[in-house]
Image 1 (tube, rainbow over the protein chains, first blue to last red):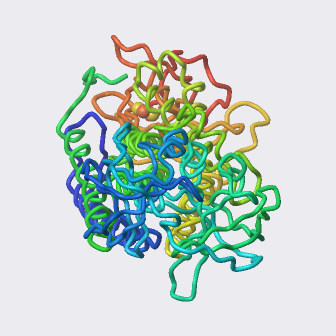
Image 2 (cartoon, chains in turn green, red):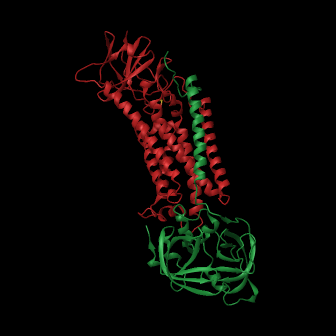
Image 3 (cartoon, rainbow over the protein chains, first blue to last red):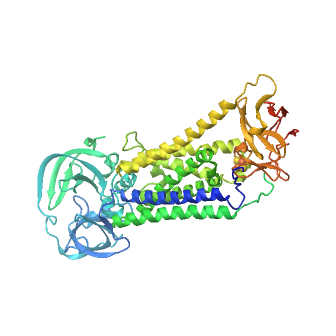
Length: 252
Length: 342
Ligand code: FES
């Protein structure tokens, strides 16, 4: 007996061939399911960060332009537990510098969507033109006292604070690098993440030696292992690193 | 082409094939997303989709690359090979979804044209700055060209050799995608399982190709006769099954020696459609029938039965005491040759 022969335009494969293929199809489906499960389980970079996409809330407090645009709220919100928020604009853009200057150290109310991580860091994506002046005067140092931690050499990864706090998840690493570059180029504050002993990361807000924004100058260093030497400051519970970006060092 | 060819054939087998293919793809995407979300409640839909479609496309690409040599080693895989283009088009679609979400998520809404951003953001030569996205983009362009020209219309219009070359680019796409994955997501997601799967896949693809290649080489060596003068003794008629062929190599070119209805005819082994091995086909309904997609040729003339017009070269053949002697010089495609009768 000659072996079976299948012709593509015939509607059906011969019997024994059909049996062989049924078996193999089932095996392949099981393999696909196993690989899908394993590939999903092996993911290790998705953090505990959240973006309340589409949910707009009211916030009020003192707006600051330094070290980066922030809001020191009158009270902490219940979701994030945070009372200090970085401010940014929608999409891949930082908070409008003119507005930041105009409202610096004033009492404001604004609307926006919350981004936060479980480590207590939070941010507001401000609804454009929603910032309004509120009666009352601001105190001198809303963030708290500023103290120098001296010159430090720190190793870590520069991320864009918006994606890291939940716009993207993961908002770090190589696959996200292009996005981080665009965000920082668009004005989102760059932050140096320095792993700490608690298995988390300390956030160092990056500014130049005079406290100015460094966004345009750090793009080549984003999402790479870097070493930065500069003066570290502690302002309230925020950490700031003052360094000349041209002296950043890539560790690759 | 074939006697019973249906112009746009969506027969029961094709339907079942596509049904299973997409059931498998959806199963993969569903499991990846569900498991990913269960373990990472903070994961966002777009990242899960980027990763699910990306990994699914890579998995499917391995199947596409393996089924060719698998079918050469074990003919029972042939029905999967037939319609391989459906796998290819599906894989392209997965890659396209992956790319579109990537562009919308990572590149759009910024201070630069999103497509430009793919190329300028990673443009260095270190591991951390290597332009992995550009490689993904180029692979997608290749897959697009292949998917867009996968229909037989293009095969006919581009001519078989051009089409075949174009579709050999799948290996370039495969190489690009390995670069895309290794210099991309694997720089961040560092579980060794991912790399292990890639290596296993690579070993499987190259192993199957080498194995099927070695087998065909052995066949060529075993049969390649000295073609000094005139006819070459290829084998005895009893060595060929009825309605089947034996593939022999004459002056480096493979020919199919068919035995049917008490006759022997010899034609080129390469099908006009996609170079399918006619010698692995069968004599059906009075025609040599290609095992890949069922194109048919009359054994005496090497011509497809009217109204089809495909033609393959024929070879002069004679019998001496039951031994089949073939003239290694091919006749122009479609030339009528009297079969040797026994
Ligand atoms: S029918 Fe497609 S290669 Fe022969």
